[in-house]
Image (cartoon, rainbow, N blue to C red; front, side, top):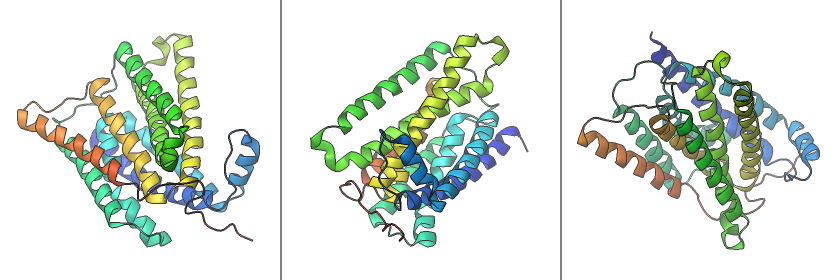
Length: 295
């Protein structure tokens, strides 16, 4: 097997594990007191006391290591397309393992988003190598734009006019933060640490840790406020679509050389955007869908 084939297999395994881990964490989040940023220690203790959340977090950590291994062996756009294509298993596991209802419109959204990102993957030319090379200016510009977008959505989240959609907004913010960390990790897998300036390497590692921690916190709050499929699906679609775009714009993953291929890729991105609009089943609210706390 080539390194790209191994990376493809690892990405598929990471997708399945990450979806199951997210469902376990969602179940755990629904059984603990609401998370508050101003009480981080108390909130962390509440989550740690949930066996469902602890199991999900442990599985998610392992899936993250598998994801990193996949990024080191295959192009980021291919890896993330595989992860996005596995979104359909989210609804299957949610309904089959946990008995959670999945609306027809959500099935359609997951199928549409997964198909769109899969279409994007099959319309690009054949890859060679892991495509980890990048220009620093392109990396900083892309990551800076994502940071500004996350800040803008955070400000919008505070608006009373969008109060009914706060759960969905938090899910998108979490997906952006996961993408910020993932793109930085992809860059580090191809960078020569011995040739990088110490301040740059330290700031890069700090970015990964900070974005990862904020993404986890935002994801937990979003999971408490919304349903499993819509929240996890929105986080995944956002993170995967952004990282696929980074593969093209930052790491030089090739686009289709034919007009037909370019058209199909444009349709694929449109399918992803439409699926993100279809995923929310209804207005989210604090405590919506929460399970009763165990006695």
